[in-house]
Amino acid sequence: MAADYYLKMSGDTTAQPNGCVPELIRRADQEGSLTASEIVEILDVDELPLEYQSTWTIGE
Image 1 (cartoon, one colour):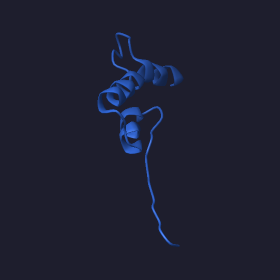
Image 2 (cartoon, one colour):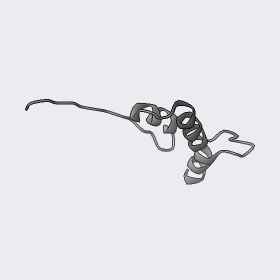
Image 3 (cartoon, one colour):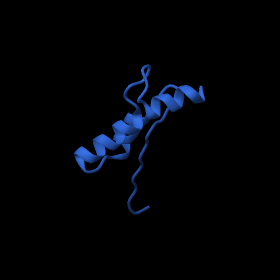
Image 4 (cartoon, helix red, strand yellow):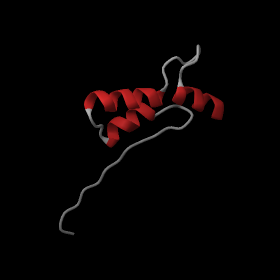
């Protein structure tokens, strides 16, 4: 499981040519910045599911 996660993050292999981390860096470079939600969308894999939640409150 850890090896599968590593391969999905790093890429550059026959089984996983495009990794999540290179994709994250490429998108950040192209767009200038990413939201937390966009980062989670890129890094979410079966081996380590990610979810983003945000809560705002004013004047409690």
